[in-house]
Image (cartoon, rainbow, N blue to C red):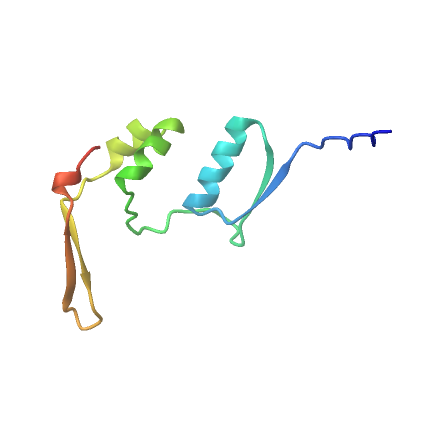
Length: 102
């Protein structure tokens, strides 16, 4: 005789941290109708005033979230970047102009 099926429970996701990854996960889960709780150790979520670089591979995700046009309106596209050692010696220069797809 087959064993009775276990009742299917709706998933509940716990998200640790309200950084960019945690907030994007919360948006995606919300759009999918999946219950979640977002935990952040700081009392308030606030911008830190630092620059954030997003690669071109992230743009389809921003479009899926409905954030691409707003992101474009507040962003600056960079042509390249440099990586330095502690003594400011250049380790590598990365040219991005040829990869611009945004």
